[in-house]
Structure formats: structure tokens, C-alpha cells
Image 1 (cartoon, helix red, strand yellow):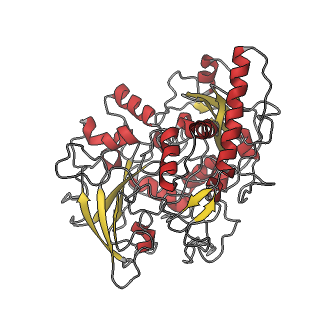
Image 2 (spheres, rainbow, N blue to C red):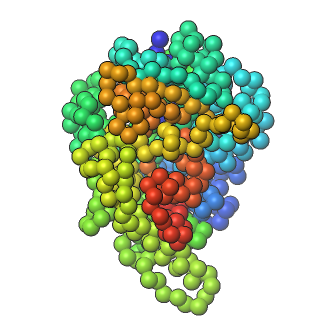
Image 3 (cartoon, rainbow, N blue to C red):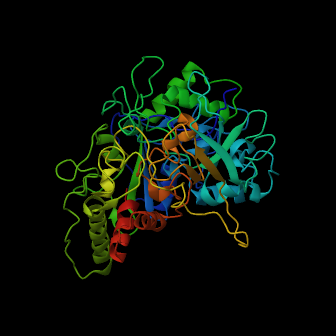
Length: 524
């Protein structure tokens, strides 16, 4: 039996530019966002999504741009509940949250609906469907970390439905949700299943995420394995769309999301798929205003910032640090004048910090070591590089090449929530698995033959020992609107994200470098 499961991400492309609403009052912003003071879009709202809208967040405002003009949401399959549980695609891909979700929005939705919103559907909006659904504790991973349950068959199955013989065995070491040891939903159930918990990815700027025309050959550059192919055309596809790359065409992903996430009785119709694809192909988002640095879209500013820049940017382009920057900032925010006016000087100081943060990200070298599918591709271990080594896709900061890697966000010893001692009173929230690579295969080059992980990542699809914990990185745009970060939600904010990498690779960032990085990331 094929299991269908959540994170729904579809597409992206280009169209006619429309001026973005910026610098408006809160009331005007709310009107631009659909005429409702509540930024939450419920399924079947029927409001018009304007050509351009802004939404408040703690760092400023996020801008949404529909390149093809206003979107009539009444009857639209992205905004209507086409399944049985009351959800629509928009439930987990909210415009105010950069077409993803933030924990603040999730918590507010619980309070506003007393936990009755379709967002909290038992299938994957709770820690396990067998738990009492009215109890917030049953939804703790969604409420605290923004995580949905992703349930995958064990052993894995390939696209044809055939069983994949895994190179490792899997045991449950810790199961705070109860789902992996559940007789109905776990590894020993009639349909053996592994439950992992992941963040939803943004459904915008997807002309970059789904671009196939950079380096997509017959093989995946990071591991030499055959690239996935489009079943309709037979052409190899990039695999940057989902965290484990299990769906590689927009139609397959949308169908999987509808059958699992929305619990639809059948797949979307051809007409519905066409409208879903067309909507997301023209949708762009980015932070448009900063509380500290001001308007990010003003004329003469850094050309990388704002949603209109996302529309104008080029997909399938590998950035560099000399002539074709990942995030083109220029020198306009460097060494700005001081006027003696407090507000203007504070703004200029914030802009200089953003410019410094950009340079830290792309020029500050450090030793990258023991990162699977990075230090194993001929670069050496360790290799002295920068953050831009992995985050090189023009305008998004994704990896341009298809594939996945492991920097330690879910695998021990680097992941948070290490196994607790028998006398510890602390409670862990995430499951922990023990994966043992078979003797017939070489051990993992950095983690050995026995690996502890919160989420086996791509290995749950490929069955490969070397893929344990490896995930596909996602885009950086609109991050201010969709905390927490990492696929497991382990970084509550930008500072936790920066501190993880500093600790993981012993970068030894100064306090100013950390703050400059935070300020830079918050403007994207």
C-alpha cells in the first residue's frame, strides 16, 4: 500500500511585474492582504489575493507578489478544501508566513479555534492519530516546533511501488510521541511505518526550486546515483523540491499532498492540477521592509532584496563571490553617512550591519568537516570554504546542484536532544532511532556503522546507509515570517541557527559577526 504524507510544495515561475505595496499603514496593509484584519487564510474564505500585499512580522513586513495579477480564490483548488478533513493547500502555506507556517501563527490558530482548526487534523497535525485530539499535548510538536508528522513505509518503496532493500536496520530508541511504537501506526503495525516530524516548505519563488536546466544530467552530482526522471518525458529532474526528494514532479507532489495531507478520496483532477501549478508558477515572496533597516525595495537599494527582485532573478544560476553574487547587495549599504538625526543614523547603522552580514556569509572562511555528500565529493575533508559553498543558488541560497547532504541537524552527536541519562528528569520531544548499517556495505564515513538520528532523512527513501540524516536544503527567502528553522524546527530563531553552525564547524564567530548575520538573514 502506498502511503501519502504531508509537506506540500509545488512550483514557481515568472510573469508580468506588479508594483509591490510598501510603506503603508497597518490598515492599508490589511486591506492589501485581502480586506481582513486577520491575516490567516481559512479554506473557502473566498477573498481575492491581491497582486501585491504585505504582512507584518517581528522583523518588519513580508511582501507577496502575484506576477499574473490578483487571484480569485473562490473555487480555486489551492484555497478550497478539496479533501475530507477541511484543509486546503493554503492551510499550511499561509501568505503571511512566506507560504509556509510560523509557530506564532500556529499557536494563535489553536487559541482562536480552541484547537478545532483543520490545521490540527489528526492525520499529521498531531503527534500521532491515536492520541486524544483535543489535548494540546497531543499536538506539541506542531505547536512548539511547527512540525507535521511525515509517515513513510518501511522498508522503503520506489516510485513503481517495488520494495527497496535497505542497507541498514532501524530500531526505536526513544518514542515520546508514541507513534513509532504504536500497534496501529508504528514499525510493528500491519503496515510498518516510520513517523518523522518536519517543517512545511515555502510554496513560492519556485521557479528557482524546480529549475531543471543547471547541471541536471543522468546522475546526482553529490553521490553518483541515477537522477530521478519525469515519468512523462523520461528526462532527468532536479530533486530540490522536498526535504527527502521523494517526489520530483509537481503533479506527483500535489497528488501525494492531496491524498495524504488533505485526505482526499481521490487525486486532484487534471484541471485542478493545472490551476495549482499555474498559481504557484507566478507567486513570489521576500521580506519587503525591515524594522531597523527600513524599506528594502526602495530605488537604488541592494538589488537582491524584495519580492520583485525574486521575479526578476535568474533560476538555475550558480552564484560566486566575484561577479555573480548569490544575493547581489552591491556597496550601497556600506559606509553610509551619519546626519545626527537619531532615526536616520540608526537606520544607516542597521543597513551597514546587513552589508557586513552578507560579507560574513560569503567571505568568512572556516573548516567544513565530516559533512556527508559535501566532504565526500572530492573537495577534501576538511575543506576551507564559506557558507556560500553550500548555499550557492542565485537569489535563494539553496544548493544549485540536485541532491542532499548532512551537516548534523538531525544526527547525533550534533543534533540537539541527545539521549538522556537514566536519572535525567528532562523530557525529549523528538523520536530517536538507532540505525545499524549492514556488514555487507561500508560504514558511514563519518558516523560509523551505528548511527543515532531523529530523522533518517533521504535514507527512508533510498535505503542507503550514507544517506542517513541527509536532507535537501531549502531557500532562505521570507525566513523572518516563518520561524523556526531547520527541517526539525530545532532553531527557534536566527540566533539559534547561527549558533548551531558556529558550534558545528567551530567557526568562532565574534558577537558582531553573529549579529550581522542575523540582520542579513532577516532582510531576505
